[in-house]
Structures are given as structure tokens and as C-alpha cells.
Length: 95
Image (tube, rainbow, N blue to C red):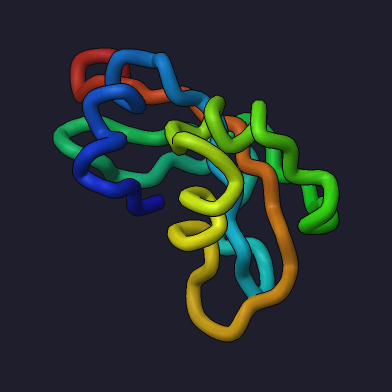
């Protein structure tokens, strides 16, 4: 999973533990680990939802000021399906 450079320190610290992505299909799987900045993102949950279900609080929890900022970043390609991904960061020592 990729994150904006500005969000990575907050992901590593554990402040950000969720992300909303707009994809054609899920790109991550529960229980899998994905490399990030010398550590790993371990996926805890993936839940499909509608775009209307995204709240301002969810946007802030994902590291964004609000819905508009999140939606500018969340859309990857031609996808239209919305996924809420819960995860935690593991340092190389923890993995």
C-alpha cells in the first residue's frame, strides 16, 4: 500500500490506522503485509462501502483535512468501488 509522503510519519507512529481507497477491486488482503518505509503495513480489515458512507471523521482518521482532500487522493484509476482499509504499521524489528 502506498501513502503520500506527508502521511507516512503518522502511519509509522500509529496515528493513522485506516485508509479509504477507490479501486476497481480490492488491492490488499486481510492478514497480508505490504512494505512501507523500512517496515510493513499489516491489513486488519477490508470493508466495501458506498461513497455516501464516507464521513468527515473517516477522512480525518485517514489523515486528511476533509472529504474533498481525501477524495482527490483516494481515487486510483478508473475504479468506482470504495474500500475502508484498517491496518497497523510494523517496524522491521517487529515484523
